[in-house]
Length: 501
Image (cartoon, rainbow, N blue to C red; front, side, top):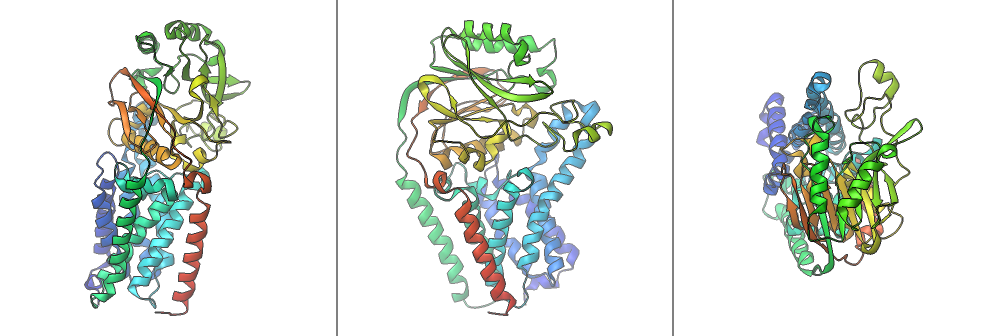
């Protein structure tokens, strides 16, 4: 008998919550991936010690709530920008978000607990079910894949598997390499019983290291990109006493010598709406001295407002426009916005009831001689499907963002890590300009080649890496992983249902 079965249920829940919180140390900025792996191994015996499926679901919910509460603790930061209006929402936002996301994991624990099946088979079932609900979490209700398990592998050779199977495939491998092993170890049986999951772990490690070693080297282009970082704190960004200072910083950085081939300003970096921003655009063109500029600006179109990116050519003329299409719920828009506004609930980035409008979808932005970019504004870089949804192959990825909303602890670093993942998945470099940081040039292997630290005003001139050949993941997307997971869960469910051992 599993000795944990003798523990009172409240103790199992307490341990599960602590394990979940500890497991989030695998994410940025800590990067202790071993912590996440150990936690996933240890949660399996607790799962198997639950006598009923309802208790397994509760254990899974508590475990996931601990994980997401730690991983998403940065979500409290945006509510402190305008504390008088929003601070009261902060604890409710974290509790609601962590608890709601945990429901996905609770479902996987509920489905997987089959008392008539072997521990190993239930461990495999839990790994596949968790992988499936994680994929659902990335797509359903506009999706929110933040803190996905695959993110622990950023800055390790294992991350190169993203170019092959994507984040959900890598997450599935992570679950499959840990949960069955933990389940097998929880049973007092022969060593042979543990050999299969242990061999699977070894095989995954060898494959990941071998695949990483075979990745082609990164070549560099002759183009220099300037990433501008004004470091405007969110509570001062639109203050009339400070906004001119931040704009002047960007003008100064833009005018600096020697001249680059392209200049990138961050999200909403112009302190005026596009329709009335011509004096600002003229000042930018004068400072750029014939260098094209990409920048973020808000614009209105009748009753609709958009979070946009524009391209100014060598003559300072607007030649490209992209409207952000994947908006942040309760940040840029509020569901049932007019009704919620009557209750005093507004989006954090707007005071109008319905907030920003969504653009038409993924697009390409022509930026002159450097080629075509997949434009991404802030939150959009979190979604691999948005990058894969571009109408054609790009030459690079281009993200502008305002991570001042995320504070100075974990949020900006986790956002950066996900940008690195998108570069690996596509085999494309990414140029990233962030208001308060971290601005960075990321090569097609996800490595940061140049960057500006968080909370520092300045600019960096970075060499643009060449794109690599199109990756397998950029061709196939998430559909093969989804089909494989559905098939495996169905087979395992059927076999455990009929009592197969």
